[in-house]
Amino acid sequence: MSIEQSGTFTLGDRAVQRLGYGAMQLAGPGVFGPPKDHDGAIAVLRAAVEQGVDHIDTSDFYGPHVTNQLIREALHPYGDRLTIVTKIGASRGADGSWNPAMSPDALTQAVHDNLRNLGLDVLDVVNMRLMFGLHPTEGSVEPLLTVLAELQQQGLIRHIGLSNATLAQVEEGMKIARIVCVQNEYNLVQRSDDALVDRLAALGIAFVPFFPLGGFSPLQSSALTDIAARLDATPMQVALAWLLRRSPNILLIPGTSSVAHLNENLAAADVMLSDAVMAELEGVAKTAA
Image (cartoon, rainbow, N blue to C red; front, side):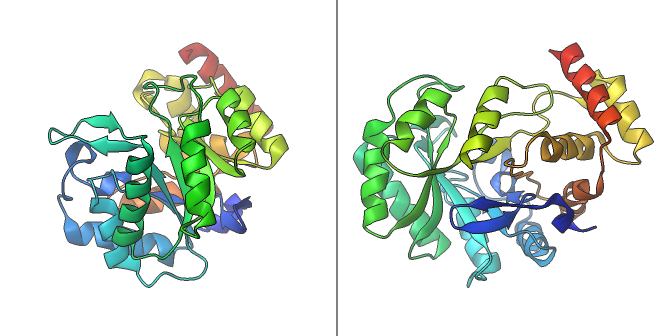
C-alpha cells in the first residue's frame, strides 16, 4: 500500500498527498459527544500519519471540540509536513442540531476555539462553511470572507477555503481573498458539481469532496459490485479511485474510526482504473441518476 501513488496537489502553499483523512467520524454518534473508543480514535490518527497522510480535515463543531482535542492529543507537536484544514460557520445545539453561526463574532470565536483546541498559533486552512441551505445555496459571501480576511491579516489563518459553495460564491470570494479549496458533496453518482470541479481545476484550486460514496449503497448497483470484484477491491475503494482519476485537483478525505478501515481506504491509491472501467463507471452513474 502506497498513498504516494495518488499523487499530490498544492493546497495553499504545500503539496499534499491527494489521499488525506477526515476526522469527523472520530466523534460520537451523530458527530456529537466523545468517541465510543477513545484509544481507538488516537490509534487511527497516529496510523494515518505513520502511513503518509499529510492532510487532515476537521472542525471544532465536530463533537463539538472533540475531534480537534483528539488530534492534539494524538499528534501534537505536529510535523512540518502535516496540513490541518478546519471549518467554521456552524455550531451545535444541546440536542446535537447543526445551526448557522456566521456572525462576525461567531466566526472570530470559532477561529480562536480551533486554535486553542488544536494547540496552534495559526490555522493552515479555514473553510467557510456556508449555511444558507442544506445544499449549496446562493447568498453573498462578502461579509463572511471579510471577517476571515481580517483574521488572516492578523496572522491567525494562512489560507481560506469555502464549503457548501456555488461557483458564483467562489467567484465572489476570489475578489476578497485567495480561495485555495472548495469542499462540497460529490461522488460517483452525486455529480451536480461536475462543472465546478473542472472550473476549479483550471484555476488551480483544490476540490475536496465529502461523502465520497454518499447515500449511494453499493448494494443498489450490481455493476459497481461486479467492477470491484474484478479489480479485487471494495466498492468504496473503486469509488475513491474514481475520484482520484476524475480530476487532478481532487483531494480525498475519507473518514473512519477504525485502523482496518483506514488501511482499506488508503489502499484505494493502488486501484488502477482503465479507460474501459471508467466508461463502465460512467454507466453506473447514469443508471443511478
